[in-house]
Length: 220
Image (cartoon, rainbow, N blue to C red):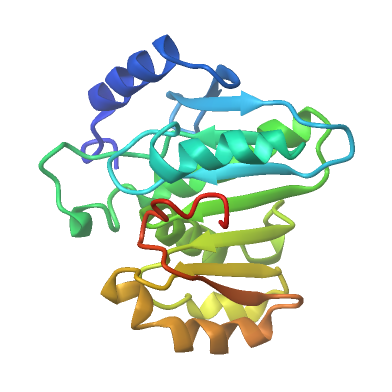
């Protein structure tokens, strides 16, 4: 895993993000590897849930729809913690991410929830998009009932849920765009079927939205 990841790229992202940060504060969280990863923390209202946000492939926690959502959800009173997910080199393909960086991704998702719980948050929700959704899917498939997350908001999952979905009752909100990419749209029915096993789960289509919800951020 360590050989596969581009830690120098993460450092460059951190410098870029922190220097231009407008909403929230930059914090560092230590992974099991001993390395620290960037997280953007914005405190919310007392009594509201805290949300960990995981971005898509090869970007950073203030990029695109995750960057917009962490600010919008904060405006609604939620505490948000957008974390840097593992990245590969700029030339890496999507398929190069799995399985090399997924163990570290799972560890970061777990450590982010622990960080919020240490601050007194008992209701912690996971929100993930695209590659981050795939990483979250693999993490939850292994964590099962031991995960500290109380719910999962999954956006643009490129494929179906892992079979582990049927082994725990974590409520899931499956979100996709009407004009999403083919791997997302092609598995809509299978994901909806899998959600029948999770208590309180449902699936939502955002009309007119693409994979990045461009121009549909408010609806999202």
